[in-house]
Image (cartoon, rainbow over all chains, first blue to last red):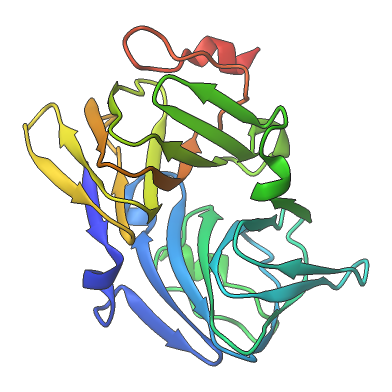
Length: 131
Length: 131
């Protein structure tokens, strides 16, 4: 059994920081669960174009409000606590936070290894994950 | 892209009720994400012996407090918002809520189909899932 605490994992090597967001990885590939699990904070007023070409991801909003734009259809879905979206078609999207941070519980399949870098097109490289 | 709202899914066929807990299944096997995602409420003062022999599960506490007892080691871990446990060894365990409900974000691998029944030993039948 693995037990981890978000508050203890903050500001350790599980906690990564990027432009407009930061993320605490509570489960990674090495944990052998078959998925990874992250608590990600989208910073206030951030606008993040993203496209995970190599991963399926589900995202559940725990706190804060914002929206997700589906770049394929142009639809915009409002996000508030209790709303979940799942990128079952590796959907290209733009995530926007309102004027407070959004806290999201994220699941990735295949699991993220922790070594990925976001590429310019907004995806994670799958190759890096295999490293 | 799939978008679902916990509050709209409550009291629909996504919402199942059992002794000491209820669960809203926001993602199931049919969504083809490779995992299922549930928001599960452990009722106040519930004591739930569980043993998922056929599934790996991670559980992240969103609200409430309680504990998890690892039946293999006898260890008891306190649960509060931000604590995650992962049953990476199909760990037999007892989950206990304090005097308020605990709200948990749960991920199952393989994904739950929604047709399972909890068996007497606290597991889900894998066969039912394949139906």
